[in-house]
Image (cartoon, rainbow, N blue to C red; front, side):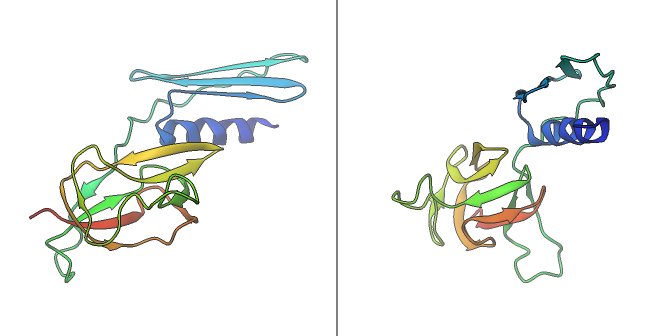
Length: 155
């Protein structure tokens, strides 16, 4: 693992909103802790320690609830966006029911999906109340940071 890989890992963890990530391989151990003030990175290696300057902490990004462009026919709906990069899942496991479907009523704090990132399953909670009018992503597909996932009618 070279310095560029470590820096990319630090950036990914900072954007993901995770508080702490530990990575252990044969010859290296990495612990990345993020907080409200700064990101700390500890690297322990059997060979000499590689100095790594940690980037400034990225503020935790909650599920974004923003209005789409006004020229859209869906301009009266709220867009729920992905807070992290990962794989989008609509149900907690293959044999369980979907979290939400088109027409489902949701409240603030309800789990609307799961996004898997680095083998961690992150429950994504709604920050808005309303009725799901459209699901914009297929189950078990990759999503990007800030990618629209759902359209919610707040009325």
